[in-house]
Amino acid sequence: MTALVEVRQLVKRYEGLSGGVTALKGIDLAVSAGEFVAVVGRSGSGKTTLINMITALDRMTSGQVWVGGVPVHTLSAEKAAVWRGRHVGVIFQSFQLLPGLSVLQNVMLPMDFAGRGSLHARRERGMRLLEQMDIAGHAHKLPSAVSGGQQQRIAIARALANDPPLLLADEPTGSLDSATAGSVLEVFKSLVSQGRTVLMVTHDMASARRAARTVVLADGCIVPGPARPETRPAHKLPGGTDAQLPMA
Image (cartoon, rainbow, N blue to C red; front, side, top):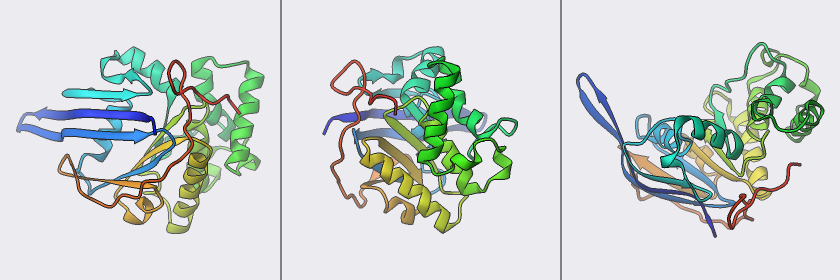
C-alpha cells in the first residue's frame, strides 16, 4: 500500500524556564492510504503533539513529515494553513463548532475560507455531508441545540467539507458516552471503507480496537503493541500516485 503519511525521526522539544521537555523522541511512522490507525497512550505520551506535527499546527524541533508527497516540515505557517485546509480534516474532542453559526454554516465554513465553488454549491455539499452523517434535519439549528454525539458528527462533516484524503482525530470520543462513541467510530470505519485515511489518537483501548492498526506511544516513543493490518482502498491525492476523489 502507498504511504500517505510518513514521519521520519520526528523530535519535538519544548523549552521552559525550569528546563526542557522532549515530547517526541525520534518518531518513525508510516500510515498507508486507506488505513484506519489508532495512536494510543496515556496523557503526556506525545499523542496530541504528534497530531500537531503532522498537521503543521506546531513546528517540529527536527525530523520530517510528509503527507501525500508534500514535505510538511518545510511549509511556512501561511502555506501550511492553506495546505491543511485543502488536504487534511481535523476533528477535536471539544468539537470546536462556532456557537453563533447554524449547523450547516459550520459545515460550510472550510469551503467558505477556501473559496471553493459558489455559495449554492457549498450549501448543497454541506447538506449532502449532513445527510451522510444522518443529521440533515438539524441543519438550521445552532450547535447548542443538539447532543454531544450529534455535534461530533457535525464536526466530522465539517472536516470532510473540502474532501480531504486524510482525517486526523484527536480524542474524538473523549466527551461522549460509550454508545455514542461507538456510533462515531462506526462513522470513521464507514469513511475508511470509502477510501479515506483516518489517524485517531486516543487513550481508550476500546476505541482503538475499532481501528485496523494500533500504534502505542509512551514517553514520546513508539513501543511494541498490538497491530491488526488491514487493506483498504486508497484515496488518491492530486499531483502524484494518489489523487483526491471527486467531491461527492
